[in-house]
Length: 314
Image (cartoon, rainbow, N blue to C red; front, side):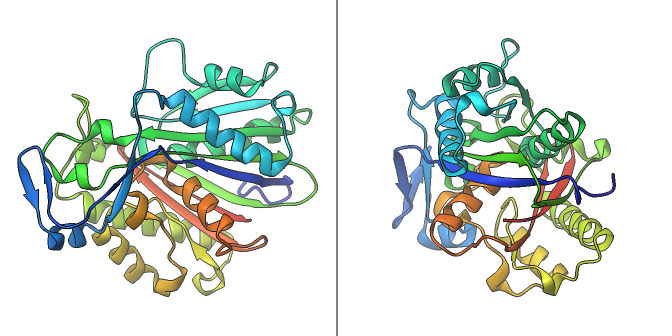
């Protein structure tokens, strides 16, 4: 299957969870003995972000976002056939975290498991769920949750503490008579795996990350749009995984896309890892910016080196 057209798969509900604590970068910001000026903050592009408290565990955040998506889809736990959790910041050996999320949702009959893929985790999760639903005609509904506590992966005193935020986002993927999910792609280039890595728990990006992220994002967009014969002008929105302002500018320039069609909540929520795409979709749908039927392209890149994207109608 080159695309998901004809599969009847669609995003029938989208939800999010933001931790209670919101950190606003107002005036000089001092972190780990280092002070950043308002100009430094403006350059990085994040005015505020969320940080999870100890009781806002990954399981709690993920289940909260999933319930939000399920409520909008009119689905309860007993309706679910599949629960997929994407996350990289709180990985554990066994048990995986997704079964606990499924238990919290009352999804007693659902297969539940974790995926990673770093910041491409949401793309990985949706593509995996789509493959399961397409292959199992008696399976109709899946929840894909993306949750990261990214603040715990920023080294003290680094710029990452001004950029990395915590959040969870989720979608309900349903198989029916209407196509919503049109296409997806996910690739890997192991030769670039160490461009950004967290082998000791702290994220350590290399300077060449920006150029690699731009190049990979543009390749994903070209692949998805090209094989579906869609012009960039036909898109209603590009809702990407945000990295930083330099990456955003490079992608905009490379796609010749009007800035008004480039939508992220990076400035107010920060880089939230694999949760960044679904929280944006949820937040901007709730605000009325995004509408049912809009044509959306979402691209993502992450350590691995992974690159992928989704093409869909809301």
